[in-house]
Length: 316
Ligand SMILES: Cc1ncc(C[n+]2csc(CCOP(=O)(O)OP(=O)(O)O)c2C)c(N)n1
Ligand code: SF4
Ligand SMILES: [Mg+2]
Image 1 (spheres, rainbow, N blue to C red):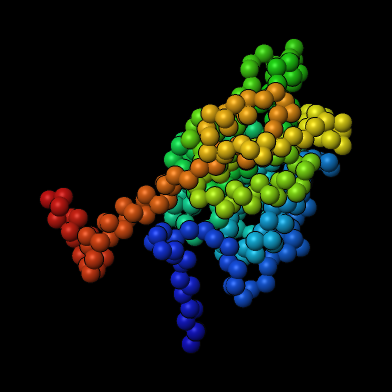
Image 2: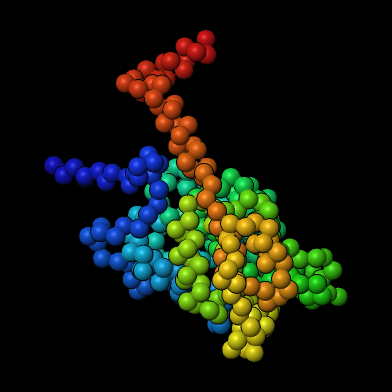
């Protein structure tokens, strides 16, 4: 006879809404980079995305996440191949549609840390609509956009973040369309955590990821990540090792000041790095949990078939 598997109760804080949290004393040993590393990443040697992957492993290890605590979701693109290279639960989903898919996971499994990875095309072209709506709904998840200012996977087309004059297969005489500013876009859309980092500064990437995962709401990180194949040197001006400048957000910046965050986000490239905006606002997760709780209260004590019967009776 098979032994019954003990049910693991969800982590429910006093607010009554289960939230994702590190599991410090699970009794299980922390997952290691060796256990998490899957397959051989198929990125070009030198691609900035390697650094983001390595730091994600570090984050999982440092925060002692177990397989049943987190999930990695992505759309389509070089950067979106991310979940393939993580030996854990994850989905390589449809181009531009990672966020709605991840929203479903976040709402139905609020005990998980939901991480979403993707590129500038995935996030701001085909997925631009979803970016706006996931931000305004304040869904609890962390979205890391590996911004290389180009479509890498499809071999050099202009992306929404490509600067004016960028020569690509779709703009042979140089890009004429004004690029979007991901930080301004996120703040204006209603994201409650907005940060910027660069894959050439590993400690900073890790710090931003940690802060983002601790945020109770939609946390967005723009991570500059060089495409060495189709936009070499794009971020040299932000890399002190290449003669550039890595400027952190002024220490006295009030991260709850939306107007100031917006102004800092508008600085000319290489701009600032760090947390621009960080406010607490009820999440969609918490609001829906409240609605569910109230609905369940009304049918307390009834069996499932009785609840169904009640609904059918109402439809008569
Ligand atoms: C519906 C749909 N349209 C277009 C494509 C082709 N396509 C695949 S990836 C991509 C752009 C990827 O660019 P980005 O998101 O910046 O990722 P990167 O490769 O630069 O990391 C495009 C246009 C697709 N796969 N699906
Ligand atoms: S094409 Fe560019 S973004 Fe894609 S793996 Fe190569 S270097 Fe990275
Ligand atoms: Mg790109």
